[in-house]
Length: 374
Image (cartoon, rainbow, N blue to C red; front, side):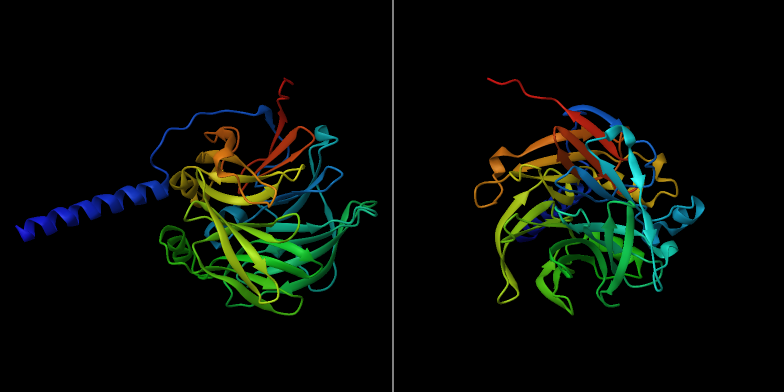
């Protein structure tokens, strides 16, 4: 009798494990295309629009050409280069324009593969400081610092910030002040791509969040499952971190004096959250999400990613007066099976319009429907 009970319990545990793993891959559930308005692809963006940040005047900085060692063959075959694009919400017909870079000694544009970015805005002169994570082939990750010149529409390279060879694969950063930022370490196996992929499947908790204080890196939040996008609340008191593997957004209260963070809230998402942005009104977060991870993985690892559609989703998370998420009011603003845009990574809103970015695909611009006044 005891052996039969143990057998039944073992089968039940195995079935539950299979069910949980299928949820992790996004194999369960039905999804239907829906739009928040008229959405079109932005011409000239074919190799990703991974991260977006919008300035108060409607200009958006966008990273394009993101790559890791798992897709080096694709990048080389298609001559993909790392670029920073500029999109003006006040002139959407102009599309996304590549910014020229004014570089000095020590910076190689051919090794520049931009990923997450964060911008310190100068509202008076428009000479913003743009910080970008780069994954140079075969080398440790760097944060590249630029100054944007609004007159020449150029990015002037100021310095490269080394993060340390043993840190791992960085993903996104959130600026506090000049040369001070929080940064996510999503995987520790930087030069072992297959093991890095394993880290996205198994809850090994090898990820973390660090704080760079201008001279050194300090670990603030340890033992995370694939931390991805990171963003600060408007008052810089809270830090939002997407846990890619757990399909959650974690909200931390920062303790600057002790270089620590207190977990306040864990929000369950519809899919695997990528980057986090704040709405123009500052009353909600926008998250680009991957609803079906197995299809995203196929898309990501394919020699020609355009051959594999990966569903895209944008989720809106309203915030309360203390900048905590009102979970009961979460909505999905956008869903696409991957025909319009594959592998959505971020979204940003400005004056009734929305941009949706992707890891390796296109950039989409939406004219949002205006709700009738009651």
